[in-house]
Image (cartoon, rainbow, N blue to C red):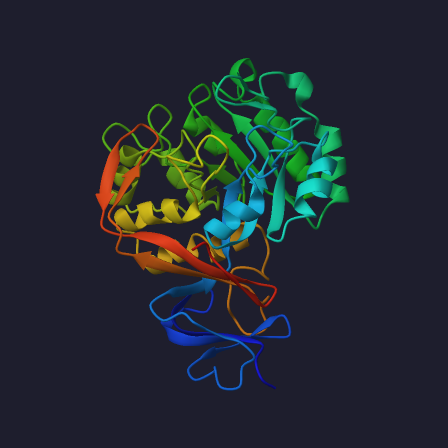
Length: 379
């Protein structure tokens, strides 16, 4: 049977199968058909991707795409097309009080797959702009444990976890208590938790000590104060203990949560993130985060190998989502892929404190395969 589509001649990097070589990737019947040489003959459509990198569909594990429903939301399809992303994971934009609108008006309408961590706060992240910042976890009256559990159980195809935001900005006088509520909901529903951390109190150590295997600490390379390493550059023991028991460390760059000083210290210690995500929202879309590809480029600049950077945006987030059907190009997998290129474009890479690093190249989008169909990137 001829293939429906073949991506021909690219560097195929699929950490799930240990693949890193020049090859064709063929799709047929809504599935990956084969990976190997000489697959283009007789295919209905062939796309020449020589010089580009073909990966499993990229997964941005931390985004805010409740566009039109929250002030921080960005348009999901526009953002995903511009960064060659196949799966967007919204992290707490909506809570149980407004998830129905998010699902009906954004998730159902998007071409790009959208999964969600449901916020334990009733209305999600409702007060987030350049002029108004209301930490939704400040008021314990908004912690909607019963409602969150009910909505999560009613939407198992879309809600893949529970979200909470903790720190001086997000939870303020409530301290660490919202985390305990969210953990209770996660336990009751059998779902993983994603926890945001910002400035103290509570401390990085106190937060990470509560997380369970499979839970995600996002903003893991945030700047001082509440960074993951001590003043001497050594990784805090509580952080090492959390990784040892299976806590997932996610970047979640955003507008306040990636520091070159922290990242370089963690790289020297050999502590790479498990997952790389953008935390893209309306206030960081034009910097300092930009998008997933720019965030991935920062880790190339830090010396993280390309295959490991790809793994942190494909296989690793798929595992965090408990979605074995995502994050791989193995034959029989869902027919989707991302095609990107390391372009020789000198780039200034900024962190959230205005510190910059120059890099001679950056990752740029070429296109995506969604549901077995080629979608070229922006021109």
